[in-house]
Amino acid sequence: MFRAAAVVSLLVLSAGLARADDLVPMDTGAVDPALLEDFYGPWIISDESGARTCRVVLEKDATIGGSAVEVDPGCAAVFPVMDEIASWRLLEGWGIALADATRKTRLVFTTPDERYVARDEVDGIFTIAPEE
Image 1 (cartoon, rainbow, N blue to C red):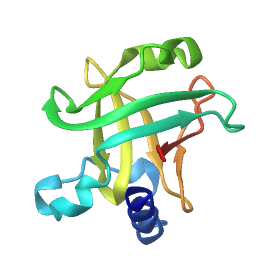
Image 2: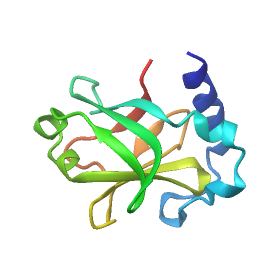
Image 3: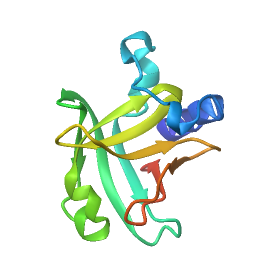
């Protein structure tokens, strides 16, 4: 519960700080490590209705293209693009980007309000939220 509350607090602080098109990778070395800890762990990706979901784990370990991500094996059946996701990274303004093995950003989630919303809807993906 604390993790979700902390992430929501960050979302409120960052709302409106940057447009999605202006986001660049965050220099996480310049960020208080305690703030970053709230991002590591399980998250749920869902469509707008919440009927279709996919579980991912955003990991701390570095990998090519950002940090490691564990994508539930059943995600590709729900959202085909998830079969291509190999890494994740934080963006300026606290956005979240998911990238494929070639480092190409496939999904970007920003915070226009108090939650993460997909910049572009891909395969019906609408939002990502910390698992409670």
